[in-house]
Length: 117
Image (cartoon, rainbow, N blue to C red):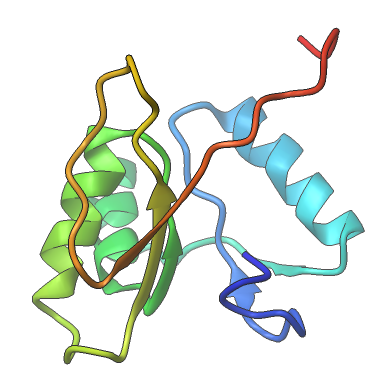
């Protein structure tokens, strides 16, 4: 995320399937100096709201999730070329991965420290 906003001026909207994961990420990001808010309620359905919030985001850091991949890909059609940043995990040798697009920055996934899981 620092690659998109090294000064941490942007608002961060953590979106995930698991509420506990979102809450944990919100706490970690806030403790690290990021401004964390809840995503907009657009349709009244959490899944659709999450999809359209991801699609409409100007700057994204996505996981290896087909849900976020599709939302990010649809969102590319909403933005003019060069006005959006999408950061995604780089393919890992020996693991299945989703395709990336020329305007997406693929970043190698860091392994968690030994004994952290």
